[in-house]
Length: 133
Image (cartoon, rainbow, N blue to C red; front, top):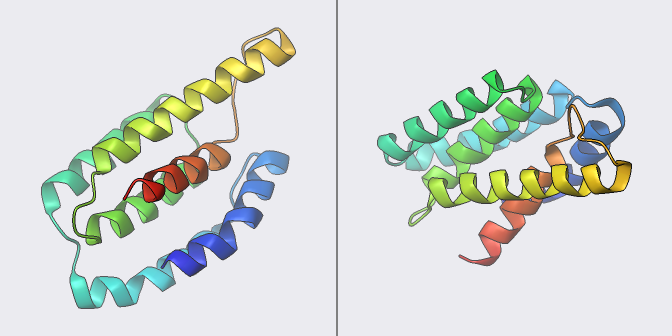
């Protein structure tokens, strides 16, 4: 699953930056790459996964787009399969990097942005998370 994430990270980030939406075809490819892991390992522990999905769902009510919600859900399920994963730490990294992105855009443009592309923040948080594992 790491290889499809690595290969699709650039097109997803570029699409999110330019169009502010993540095409479903990229998310479908990631979901199909997740199926073998799910069939052999299952979903992992259910409590952290439910908490992560509920947190992500709450973020969608606060303005996060559905493409970002689907991307975070796929990554959360994949991380939950891995032994020793901390979805709470990944969620905290994602929120911290997104907040840093907002502050950086506010300083650069001298106004608080109404929306930001979250895919760069998600993949930066994922790379930092995986680097600490």
